[in-house]
Length: 385
Image (cartoon, rainbow, N blue to C red; front, side, top):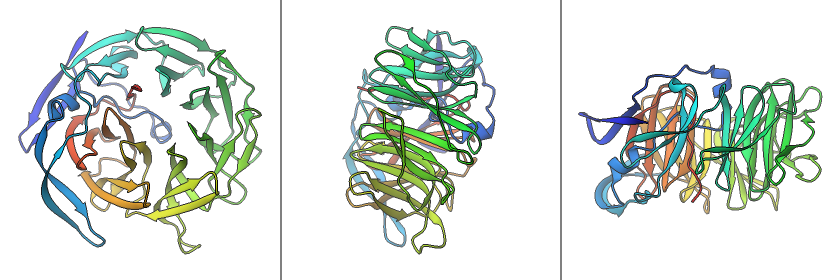
């Protein structure tokens, strides 16, 4: 057991910083970091200290305008989850790569499970963690019991680089993004892996997303540098959706697939943007944003895209899924590197950067509720309620 150590920042009294006491982990290569599904080590402890139990507080809210941002002071109710609903799991690299639970209410860190080797990708579904390891095998872990439910041997000799867990199956990408790649389905009922689905010659897979509305794959195509494929879970067949966009990040929810990258509003010149793909109509609706987002997440009442090197540094953009418009622009600080990750959970929006900064954003008022030091590049997980 260890304890997270807190300290206040004199120049930002509402923000708190923390780090795991054991030390700093080894950094992963930037080529791997760009495609990881997990974020950059734990933010969980920020919630309890910064926001308490959803108390009503006076806050300064950034309100976006069509041309400039203005600010106004309002009073609102914090949406962050109360004590007892905030248990988070991550990896303690300095302690040998074990899975740990961070208690955000008292800062305690408890080891849950020893994991041999390194974990390259992680996702969750139905209360279980799915961990993609450096050997290519996938571990199914019950974090509540602190035990491994199953270990699925690598069905491919290539390295593993992405994992996305759905309710009925978990999908894994093997190979090297931009080169030879394959997609593997693991059946959640039997914990068995199907035969690898190889990308066609000259094509490559980059990211996989298993959601309630289907399984989606970002890959290259003869016409576009990247495109969106629908995956038939029964047969593994891929259908090119032929979107006109260069995709850097993907997430899904509420009946749509959301993409971040470069859009082509005039048909010729690419600009930074976010797009909503409707699986029913095959329609792609695009929204221009000031900087290219490296990560996107659906949840906590919005669609969230984060740019690591925006005009004002690291910036989080909130998209209203109903209107398809930018509802808020949230500056997070100086750019500390291009690699960024956004995720949602426990009533908050969480952003981490490769430069070592981590932020908790309260979606009730679009303000930064807490700030933390990141330890490195591995692991942030919000369990489902």
